[in-house]
Length: 77
Image (cartoon, rainbow, N blue to C red; front, side, top):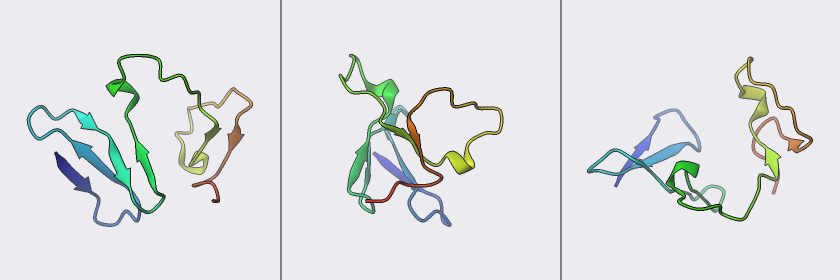
């Protein structure tokens, strides 16, 4: 795997397969989470989104149309 980190990004990194370039699960030590790309799943994971995060930096043309809680950045805790 290849771990790509933007030089100025405090939290962002992305893992890629060294052979095919596919996006891989990414460990985020700062928040103690693992992010799994939805495209990597073969079956319904049995969970649903709980909130929208980083909505302050979403694309202006993207409308959030559900009632999930929204956070401007990463939610507290």
